[in-house]
Image (tube, rainbow, N blue to C red; front, side, top):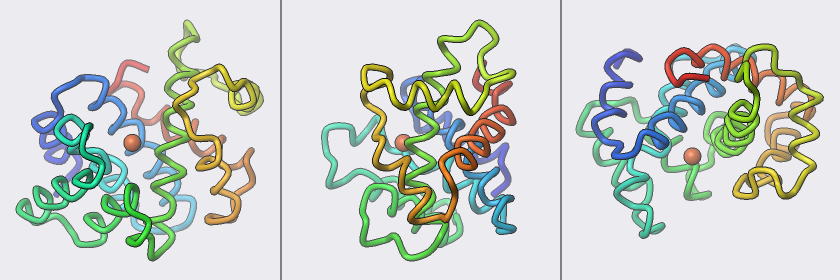
Length: 181
Ligand SMILES: [Fe+2]
């Protein structure tokens, strides 16, 4: 599935525009991470894009979250690595390789980066690692963002916090036109 078709599917399945924009932000971060590791960018970006595909249907049902998305994705013929990565972001038993671990940290850092971009007049343009790190330390800023999951970039991916945030910013900037950031 190419990215245009994938985004159409994401638009169809999401009910809230904020959900769609979240999906695309994680798509961008995952694409940049996949490239950094010399892995398949298309697989990584689709995993990011689809990770919360069923968010608006399963928000109140965490046991079903990601399983419904996995069903839709299998029906659509999406690659099993992508389906596994989607399951992995919500259910640790599926975290079997670098990509399926990366999606957890990418999900969290994308939340922080989008929140940080929204309070800047120039949005993600010119965003700096140092200013994002300040926001990360402010507990009252974007309190829903799981700081421990961001820290997993070090233990699970071997990336320093600076490197990880830097790659995340670049990934977000690549998808910024699609989500108004
Ligand atoms: Fe997410």
